[in-house]
Length: 60
Image (cartoon, rainbow, N blue to C red; front, side, top):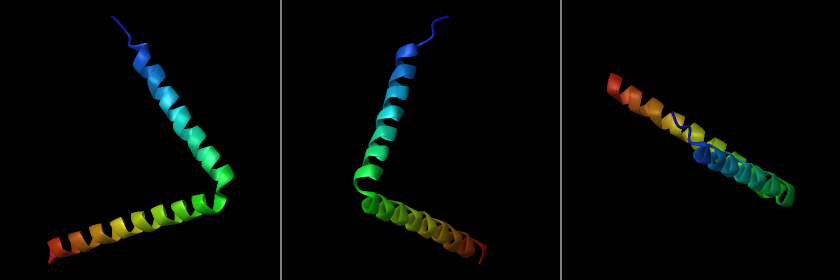
């Protein structure tokens, strides 16, 4: 039985790189980060609203 550690290590490195970029972005541009989070929250709420409209139309 062979375990592939390379993929696991690459996945961890990728996650660390993304986390590092997020921390860097938060520290260098906090207002831009806040705008991004607000925009993402609005997009999620819009998506849930559209799912509600879809289900409502299905039940009519």
